[in-house]
View (tube, rainbow, N blue to C red):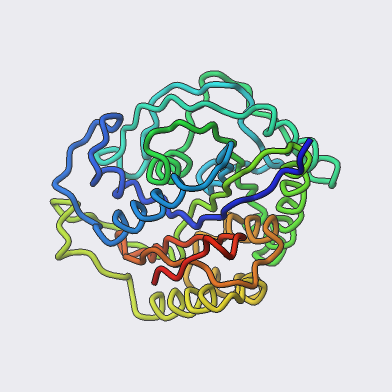
Length: 301
C-alpha cells in the first residue's frame, strides 16, 4: 500500500456569517450578501481544491469542546440540523455528513498510543458543530468528500496556552502517522479565526457592511504580524509566539487547530498562500493554505 500523505493544509475560519451570506439551500435564513472579501477568498481556495486529488477532509474545530480527551466522529453518517447558539438567526443548517470512520479510528488509535486520552463519538443524534460545517461547506460546497472531525480538548482552560501547544503538537504527530499508515491523501483544516475579540451587539441588519470593522487596532497589528510570518514561511516561529498572541487577542487558535495542523505538516518553512482577510463582528479572519507541492504552490496575495 502506498504511503498516505497530507496534500494541503487550510486555515479556514468559520464565522456563520459567510455561509449565511452565500444563501445555500441547506441554511434556513436568507441574506442580502456581505463579507465578500472572505467569501471570494474561500471561492478561490475551493477552486484550488478541485484541482487536487484527495480522499478525505480532516478538520479540528474549537466548537466541539471536550474536557476529557480528544474525540473523533465515529459513525458513517451524521444527519441533523446544526444551529449556531449565538447566531441562530443566521445559521440553521441541515447537514448530511459522510465520515471516513476507518481513518478516524486509525487517528484515534495512533493518538492513544502516543499517550493522548481519546474516544470515538458514536451517538447517532450528535449534532455536528458549526465550525466543522462552515469550514467544510465553504471549501467543498458539494459535500462530495468524507470528513473526519476532531474535537478541541480544552487544555488551554485547564492549564495554559503553552500546554495546549505541547498537546496539540503531539496530536498532530499522531494524526500524521495515521494518515501515512492509511495510504490516503488528506486535506487538513484548522477551523478558526486569528484575533477573536468581538462585538457583543449585532447591527439590525447583520449584513450591513458599514458596521463591519476589526475590534481594535492592536488586534489588527497582531493579525498582520502573523500573516506576514505565514507568507515568509516562518511557521515554527508562529507556533512559538502563539501563546502570547492568544493571551493578547483572545485568538481562536487557543483551541489548538493551527498548532495541530502545522505539527502534522512538519512545520512548513515555505510560504503560505493567503486568500483573504476580513473582519467579522470584530474578529480577524484569514484564509490561508499550505501546499507541500512546490509545483502547484502559488503566491495569491
